[in-house]
Every structure is written in structure tokens, then in C-alpha cells.
Image (spheres, rainbow over the protein chains, first blue to last red):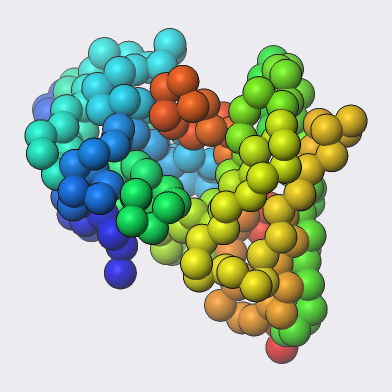
Length: 110
Length: 119
């Protein structure tokens, strides 16, 4: 059972927009920064969003992040087939004294 | 460029120990903590622990206490993760990941090391 809860899957057509939610608690999302990671099939995760809503250099502005209370959201606009991947939210959990991840959301671009 | 390169895949017998290396390059090794994260087949990412590469201080997930040892060799700019008393449930891809404390994220990941535990 993951400490952070994500929907198992989302799908949308090319060019459309999709959002992925991540729900936690006051010990993790509520009091710590959230990151989002993209994991393409057979590869290591890559950071898309850090500090709730910031993008590393090289990440297109089609990807956005937000946080409110104990939940966070990843948004992807202008969907491309290359965006098909698993997406994970992650943060620090002060009660567990360790990093925690969501269960992952598989994005399908129909 | 900044990268973490891990050692190759391993096959281990139940009850054995396994040790994976993570070689850092392209940055000052002792400036960033190294974490270990694993992913069982088809499963989520699971944080295992981390090491302060400057002073060697470690924090382990409660789940792995007593079985996990993370070390580092600063002269070799390499971190190591050793998991003992392996069981079939430990079959997974193991990743090392650099923690950037300035931006609170795992910004660089190794390519992953597949460990298969067989009986």
C-alpha cells in the first residue's frame, strides 16, 4: 500500500490535456515539496517537476505541477505519443523519516 | 556530464547477500546525498535509504533495517548498497539516485541494476 495515492491509469487523445492527482497527508505532501517523475518503459525515472511546480531545464512547459494542502497534481497539455509512460509523485515523509512515492499512474495516449 | 553508472545485473540465491555499486561522475561527489530506490517487476518505486556522502551518515527505511548497508568510497566517488538475507521478494531493479537538497528532488538517477533472487 503506497503512502501517496495516485490513479492507476489515465488516458487521452493526442493534443489533449490530462491531469494526474497525488493524495497524501500532513506528514508528507502537506509539509514537504512534491516532485513528479516520468518513467518511460524500461528506463530509469526522470524528474519532470520539483518543488511542487518548477521544471528542470529541458522539460517543456507542457508539463506543470501544483499543490494544495495534502494533494498535488501533474498536468500535461498537448499530449504526444512519446508521453506514454508511468508517472510517479514523490516527497519526503516526516513521520517515516524517508522518501515516499505514489503507486504510479500509467498514461496512455490513444 | 553528470551521471551515475551502476554495476551490472546479478542473480543470487535465497539467503545470500548482494552488493551493487553506483559510480558518480561530473560533479563533486561529497556535495550530494545518494539514495537507493528499488522497483519490483510491475510495482511502484520504493525508497530504501540514503547516505550523506560527505560524512557517511546513513538513514534506512524501517523495512530494511538490519538487512541493508549503504556505504561510500569518496576516493572512488562510488556509493554501494548491500542487502543481506535475500529472498524472492527482493527481486527488483535497484536504482541509485542523487538527492539535490537545494531543490528537494532526486535529480539524477542511475540506469538501474536488476537483481534476481532464486531459490
